[in-house]
Amino acid sequence: MSRSEAPIGVAIIGGGPAGLSAGLQLVRANRRIAILDSNRPRHSATLQSHGFLTRDGVPPLELRRLGREEFERYPTAIYAQSITREVIPLSPEAARAAGFPDGIGFTVRGAGIRGAADVEFTARRVLIAAGLTEELPALPMIRAYYGTALHSCVECDGFEKTDKPLALIGETSDVFSRALLISRFSSDLIVFTNGADTVRPEQQAQLERIGIRVERRPIDDIVGERAEMTGVRLADGEVIARVGGFVRPRWHAPVEFLGDLPIARDGWGLLEVDDRGETSIRGVYGVGDIVPPGPQQLVIAAGNGARVAAKLNLDMIRGALGVGLVDA
Ligand SMILES: Cc1cc2nc3c(=O)[nH]c(=O)nc-3n(C[C@H](O)[C@H](O)[C@H](O)COP(=O)(O)OP(=O)(O)OC[C@H]3O[C@@H](n4cnc5c(N)ncnc54)[C@H](O)[C@@H]3O)c2cc1C
Figure 1 (cartoon, rainbow, N blue to C red):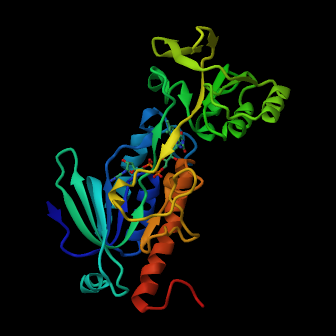
Figure 2 (figure 1 turned 180 degrees about the horizontal axis):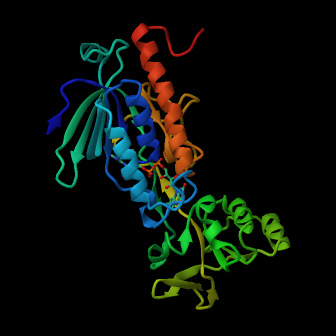
Figure 3 (figure 1 turned 90 degrees about the vertical axis):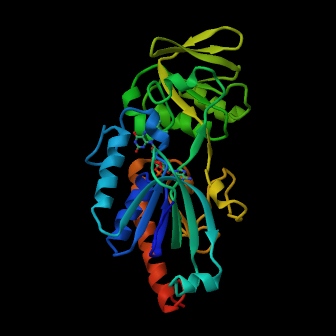
């Protein structure tokens, strides 16, 4: 176990673009910052990341490597390859004894991965930047095509699908608006609801007016030849030729490390935050894909990381002076 001797400013859970960007801003504010990262980015399924200014087309892990290097250049940066297992609030007395004048603090414990030691930090604030885990529709071969032929982020991967015969597979109520978005890239689009009743009749009529068919029959599987997707096979055996497209996964916020701590979530399970990025637990902030409106893009996660870092820094300054969160 590696126990950080001196307390730290912020323990950041997750070293994706949101966590790394927040970390960079906070070490530049002369704060001691620890990033705990389990290195399981959601977009590792893909070979290229698109749309991050100056890094369009870069492999996802390369983007992280560059971000981590920039963060670790600062003497107050700590990067721990570990899975956060516990976040436990300190009592006000224990927090003050740790040197946190506003009586807010946390113990954060992580289990080391790939040979790294377990870690324990005493932190004034916690920033959750753990991204999302995702559950794809239950089709045996869908994982094999996810990140190559099938994607989830239209803004990220729509361009590469221009004018191709596409599928949109989704069992959630936002499928209609996603279909509209994809229609910008290809007019040859079929929406597969996989038996779910998620496209209303008036939405179907609207889609049909712009040439998009809605296929409501259940899907058996995705079919292909070697690595190339060639179609969607329905439960009745019919194969509809498609070379790729988009799938709407169901997303889950991975915050098991909070244990029984009650934290407010929205209808999709994302962490609710106020306009400063603070969750319903005082001193615990959230940023990136894990907060509403949910999964967006690398550049947005990084931008939000910088914005929330500034709010966190100010919260700690105001907390030390006892002047409250905002001016009266
Ligand atoms: C297949 C795919 C392709 C994509 N392509 C693009 C693209 O081309 N361009 C684009 O802009 N966006 C793309 N995205 C979206 C982009 O990846 C996300 O918007 C972005 O990564 C969100 O950043 P984040 O920092 O919030 O979360 P993430 O990048 O998911 O990072 C979260 C990190 O937290 C870590 N973590 C989770 N739990 C714990 C824990 N308990 N302890 C420690 N660490 C933990 C994870 O291991 C991970 O490293 C794509 C997404 C997918 C799924």
